[in-house]
Amino acid sequence: MENKAYFYVLKCADKSFYGGYTTEPNRRLKEHNQGTGAKYTRHRTPVQMIHLEAFETKSEAMKAEAAFKKLTRTAKCQYLKNTKSEQLP
Image 1 (cartoon, one colour):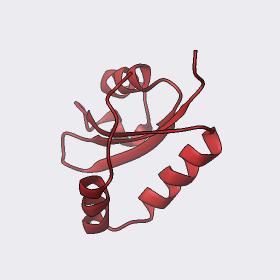
Image 2 (cartoon, helix red, strand yellow):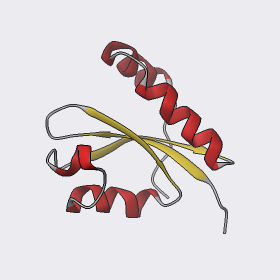
Image 3 (cartoon, helix red, strand yellow):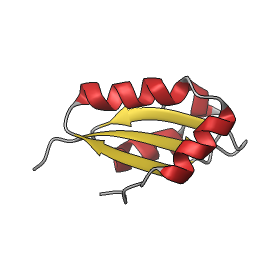
């Protein structure tokens, strides 16, 4: 089994974005929707995973998350439009 790390973006019920990283995207999405994920998403359910990028290391995924979180909303939308997203494994 591959040990990939993923950077993901959720679209929350209030239309805000949440970026994170994980090694198990399906499990993480389920946690967010059950209210046991991040504090930010707890009261913004349901959430949809709208972007998923695979990386070879956790460090690379964390760097992608940090860079995404520094962007303005407009820049985040542009990033999501211009970057290819993977399907959930």
